[in-house]
Length: 243
Image: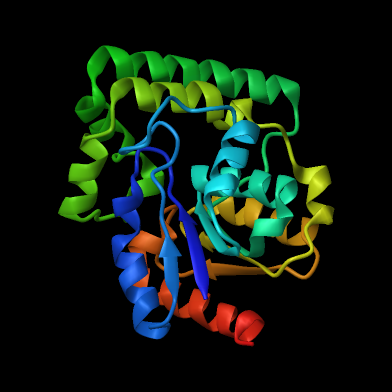
């Protein structure tokens, strides 16, 4: 089985290390493609808008089960809708399909632009200290390798990621989700009430999808409850793709 994993904002491919190890324990023959997302890690070039970034990622990938977390999940929805030929199944972790109202998108874009300016002015380390202290990451204990990799992100890369691919810049995809016809697993943490509500909306919008709310977890489900995350994903994938 092929898994393609897309990380969240401020992370790198290193952030998936523990999840991959846990998934491999359950599926020893599985293969993994784990890119650094646009504007992050060792990725070359600056971020593209979500639609263009999704095409770039799809062109680099092979067909498989895709797992996207937060920002990675938003890219993933675009990949699934624009390039269904590379998508066997979807795992959407703490993911939104966008903001409905233009006024909401404008307000969020302005906030993201201000945040981007602060990253360029204060640097990555100062920004990460603020970012990781947000309430939605209260239960997260990131590994030393993950934290070190995040600190190697560049200020301009993270800033442009917000400006080009932040939630406020995302085209709302809710009306398009009915076109998704692949097995879909939606995962949210019980302490992340905002995304639990969004997850329920995604389940209603994507025919045949399943929504799992993970106990004792916030936004970063796969990092806060890694073993349970791997168990659910592996069992779900085996059910749908064992043949």
